[in-house]
Length: 216
Image (cartoon, rainbow, N blue to C red; front, top):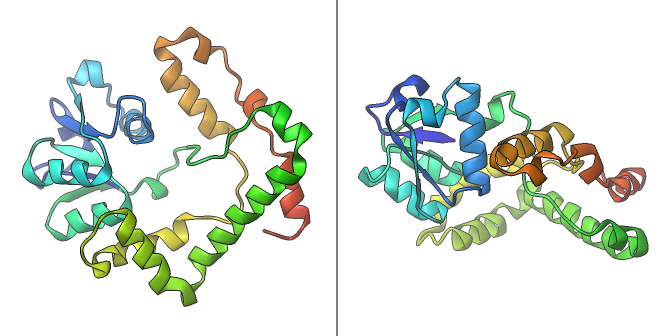
């Protein structure tokens, strides 16, 4: 969720403002850039500054106390700020922006030489997704989420749980369009990254085996 100070009502009002990110090149920064691009905003031209704040809890606190004007946050912290009257400029899941989220990376030589190990890891990941999405496991998942986000009360992770069960999909194929977007952003100032081809980075043979097994 892209959350902003209550005084900001539209993406256009981000001009001249500051955005909190985890790091300059991290996932939060990349998706912030993709969303600004979607809205037709250019940080250099529109004088939008990025401030590196670190983990999600610190970024949320930064928006809350006015250290920054807006930030791209996970659902748990986003919902928390929304409940306090802060403006939600967008829910990224509802925007047509191709993006490669969390992924599993390995050398191609390892994928070729050790298919059993790769398959075991993917089965474990798919089992964890199934566990998260199973309503019977709500209390355990919420407890783990609260611990990871350092919440004092498990109840504070409820909103995060409700959105998370829909966020994690069983179809874990990598996104070529999403990877192209990342290459485009990170390659703006790096020739080596600009030369990369999304199709050449993807190795989905193991995922295809998981689908044949009926895992999704």
